[in-house]
Image 1: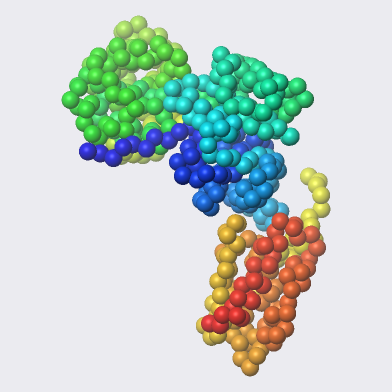
Image 2 (image 1 turned 60 degrees about the vertical axis):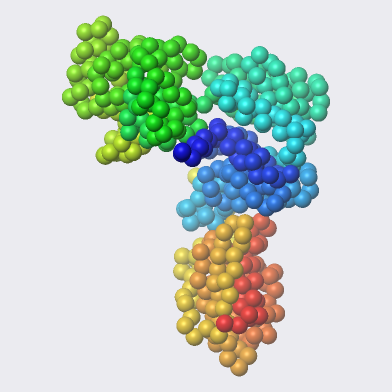
Length: 362
Length: 126
């Protein structure tokens, strides 16, 4: 018997999840609602302070802004009054020493009662459930004199409240429009005379892993704390059932190419990582994957093997553009050795591709 | 690039942070205490040698921001040779003022950490 796998939630919901699981009855929730552009900060990140003194999460990546967030959370927990504050990312003495980060961030600090009737609880719990279902949703929070929070689905249904029916309608419409807009992104918006923070929550990243190998086992284990969904495909039922693959979100025994085609046909197309190291599996799977919208198609193997598989796929009718999408050797070039390090290099390359930072391949 | 002129305290803080005075271990310490600012993470240890009611020597070690380090540096200079009575009468306002004008109110805890640790050291003994 193996221990259950702890799967992380969306990065911006993990702190909320921890606060709810803490058993505390009240807390202060700090939300990052504006940043001046640093790439390592994510709008909507939370820091939470429970009434028993335990704290969770971070609104940045550490540093003095987190100390100020804790200070503000203590104040709000005592006063039960919502606050908005602007926090410098570095103090002026650090800047004078050339060691600081310029700019600042805006934080919303709210008291929360950890029971179902609190609109913030209703909205954030609903967001967690939507993430589990793989649904795209948005959280709308009125800033300024407003209060509460709304969880808005694509069809316009909502949970939570701002305590004002007219404001609720404005927030729902704004969130729905933001979700549907081209290049939609989280941020601050103005609607009907109210400032809003709208946070888009996309479905978790999904990766189809082909081949129940040690690299696959390591990949599933690394993906779990990142909150990614992993779908492990292999023709061998007994092998797939082995405990070392327990970290996979889903295990699918059958014809890999058919299973891959089914997964690629759905919305939010997953990445495809082929680690079978078996041409019987690789060729039909890659034929389907390279012609799909998959954001990433990689295959474990040497450059020589890559040349060989590309030649076979060309015989199958794949064009140059389709063949150029294949990432093999797979993973970032970090000199990885052994299954676990190879898995790290693949995870790093997936992050780079999803963030638009992947180095060119040649 | 132009911007607002730096606050007056910054020059002294940076100077003492780069070249802190009396930042060392004091083997002959008769009094010592270690304290921290729990929110920001500054941590500072003050060691004193007291003889016949006077601070013969004072030294500190710190993992702290520039303001807390500079304040400890200035404070040890100030109390070396002073009587225990003079040292304990030093106020937080005096210690903050010694850094120069413009120390942000939010950083008062950093500026006064060394004084609070000094007082506890004198209370506690070695």
